[in-house]
Amino acid sequence: MFWGNLHQAICNKLREEIPAIQTCEVYRAVRREIIAPAVFVELASLEPGKDQGTEELALRARFEARIVVDGTVEDSQVVVRSLVAEVARVVSKNTWNVKNIAPGEFLSAGGDDFRPELDAYLVWLVKWIHELHTGESRWSEIGVIPHTINVGDVHVGP
Image (cartoon, rainbow, N blue to C red; front, side):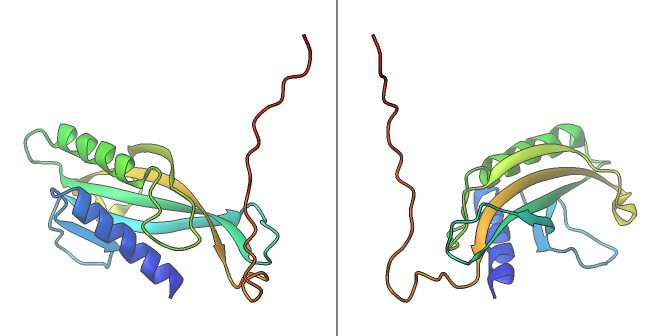
């Protein structure tokens, strides 16, 4: 299950790289109590990606991570921003060791006041995108894998 493995790989890496995270979940389950600091990871949207000519579906997957801290704790404003910067660092250029996924592209981070169930907490949102390809490649049976070759610029003239 590609999507489940990808989500879990993201949570595992965030926990590994940022020891301060006490809870990391995919699609937060509704409950009354959160052990904070917490991170909740979601796939927010899918857009068309760059077709590689393999007949795989090319997608740009937009992910969001909500960083949640107790707003009553001293220095909570600094804590949440520090965690946001760390999450942005981890998601940037990360592939989570998952096949057919391009390195993460950090998009933005900012306060998130739009989740009523998290009103008792200080919440910031980190957004990033991965280009990925799903389905079977038409080239896999014959062992040919299309790839890009970058050729340096040629200067012609005086």
